[in-house]
Image (cartoon, rainbow, N blue to C red; front, side):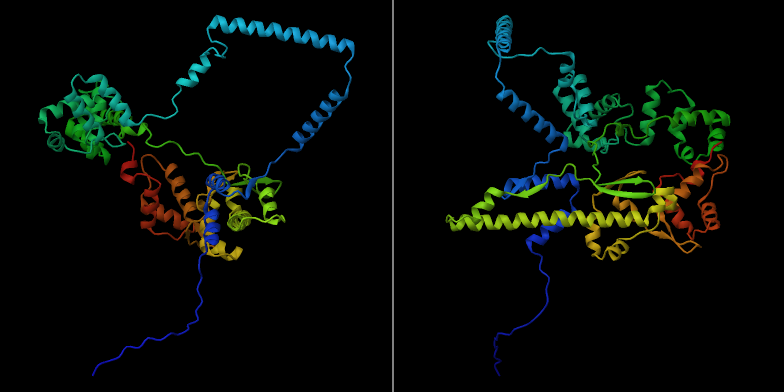
Length: 488
């Protein structure tokens, strides 16, 4: 029995939230930092003729301009007397004399009437000043080109330098280099030894042991106990088993300690002194100042252009003279876009202010007394207080910075998880980390605090925290374990 397929049209009612281009633009503006917003607005003003930048004139400059106009009007209306006319003639003669002097100067310098300023020491310095720092590879290649005589050696050396990472270590084996270059292993080894003589000292090593030995060799310590310890007992040195090292080498504990101190002055990652990235400068979006006993929030909008609608193009839409339909539609679209942009900027300003105000209210203890009083905080808590969606708060706090009496801090800094305490309120994880760091900084040199001991001390002070969490926080703080902190 054949089945039949029927098609029919049915109406279905459902609610659906659609993200219009205007809404997407508003969310994008909310997430931008002040620096990014300036670039975005400049691009919008370039593409939208309805947008203009409002000129902001200071009151003082306006008064100065008014005074200048008054002076110019008085000078223009005044009738010069004979004496004043004579002075003007003398000034004209002086100008002619000056022109003759300049003419002689041009002729003597062969500039044919063009102004050619003389170079000063300061000018030469500014022109020759380096604005981009060289990378580690740039520095090594510069030394390589000064040291190589043949194209083959230069090619081998460039391949070696290209495989040195930002820490200064060679991340490829000699066998792989030899196979890749189709060169004898002895030639590759010879060029590697040459690269290892370059600055920074210790570069081109394949592991920590080799870079320490290269540095000790450079300082003439090949026959020292430090060289032997770095060569044969690096694992024991890391675990600070000084007694084992002393018995193995037949030297005193004092000699081991002296050698360990010398090794401690060496650079384990010699390439890091060459920054791979240019420094990024932070412009705070929010300024927080304490006035009397209150904290005042100021939005940093000094660099933002103040936008307004173009009067000229608005007049084109409202004037009685007929306008081309395509041009009218274009201007209407741009007008709507400009109005929405200005409203979005105002909404962004109000939202950032609300979020900052709530953060300051909750974290007042931190601003007053320091990180030990930083309270745990979540995006959800802020969203509930200002009656906005959690995703909106997330966008506001992304890439935004607040200049506070305790430094310039990212807004994300104030959002941390909590550790339960015996008291009614919890403590921020950052506060607990600060307590751990303070305890370790003040521990006895001969008997440092273990993670278990730290857990017990924190528990005695009301922090409900496990030893595993203490270990995690210590590692985040980049603090060595107890056996590596113990001193002789």
